Image 1 (cartoon, helix red, strand yellow):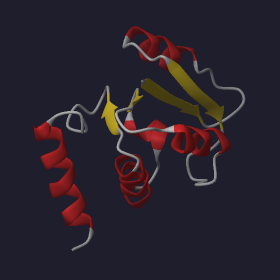
Image 2 (cartoon, helix red, strand yellow; image 1 turned 30 degrees about the vertical axis):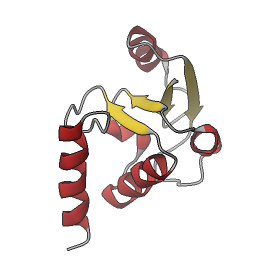
Image 3 (cartoon, rainbow, N blue to C red; image 1 turned 90 degrees about the vertical axis):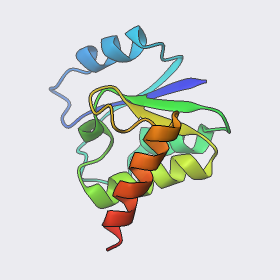
Image 4 (tube, one colour; image 1 turned 45 degrees about the vertical axis):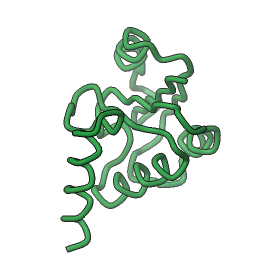
Length: 115
């Protein structure tokens, strides 16, 4: 299943641009919320992570919608991978663990995180 996550930081901001992009790219289910990305405890993000199954692909319009820190990003992606799912950013095309090249790039970047 192609599952998407969309987020804006405040109630006054619109999710419409992200939702349009995600739908155009085949999202079957979209988790969306209006909350700052600096908070790791985000209800819809956690729901999305909990529902993932092996073979699912998570798409985001851009990585800043998923995470505001590198550490948090790597933790979220590692959670997705542990579930047997993959992730793809539509803006940052280097993050696409649905391909062998994308998995390799993510592994290299993750290795730098631990140095």
